Amino acid sequence: MDPSNLEPVLAKDSRLLVAAFYAFTPLDDERREALLSTLPSLAREGSVLGSVLVAHEGVNGTISGPEHGVDALLDHLRASLDLGDDHYARLEVKRSWAEQPVFRRFKARRKKEIVTIGVASVDPSASVGTYVEPEHWNALVDDPDTLVIDTRNSYETAIGSFEGAIDPSTESFRDFPQWAESTLRPLIEEKGSKRIAMFCTGGIRCEKASSYLQQQGFGEVHHLRGGILKYLEQVPEAESRWQGECFVFDQRVALNHRLEPGEHSLCHACGLPVSAQQRELPSYIKGVQCVHCVDRFSDADRERFAMRQRQIDQRQIDQSQIDQPQIDQHNIDQQQA
Image 1 (tube, rainbow, N blue to C red):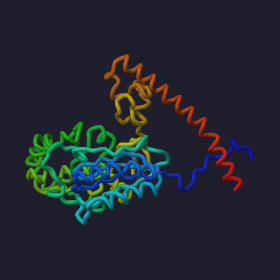
Image 2 (cartoon, rainbow, N blue to C red):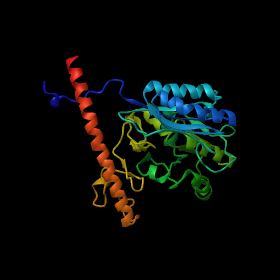
Image 3 (cartoon, helix red, strand yellow):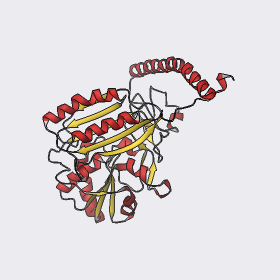
């Protein structure tokens, strides 16, 4: 049998589990430092990559690796945190799968906030809106008396959102409080909306935003538990109100409704998502510029970006030459087994 005619065969357990998670639960200095010390070694043991933010208010992270390694790290977090039955005190986990690594390394970092809104009084464990399960979200947002708000950044909302959602066009979550006071409050008065429904990627930003709005007297506030990712996981595509793709903060860039990598890639010059159609434009040069940044950088910058892209391309060629003999031998072994 000619090995060159054999198709690559992936082992059943070759997929990598991607877990996005967070929990608002108080951590004193001792327990925070203990987590920062133990998580890297646990990640190494389980071949887990990704990032975990640890603050006095809780933890927030996305990790990826073999299922047993990811589950071991999540189990360690559950054992180390004071979790409870309240929604905010649970370790909220969204699971998806990838065929190849989506992170380059593992980092556990000390932060002031696990998601930064910049208002010290905001505390979901003290005041928070009403949690809405994914299966009840459609009924809520279909109600004309509901004002639906996307709490994500503008580059995220540009590639997908819920039908009819308001885009605050913020560049950072820190901008949300100012937008709420300058734009949302007058909008509620103008429309006479009875309630607010907010969402984000995994639930953490809209949960914190709901805490802020509750404190500021915005009335009836709801937010999507588990965010867009949990909605896409649980709600059938035929019944979905979601349109487009969901931006994620890893090398997959964006996910479709089946939680599979979508059509968007990142421009490595400006870091913004670029669609397949935008990659066909004359302005697009891989790794150098895209429609979002064609007038943003100098010629010297673009030459530097081009050199970096050539180095990346060469590394990929070198790696493929190393990997191919291993794939060929694996396929032969599978066929002869």
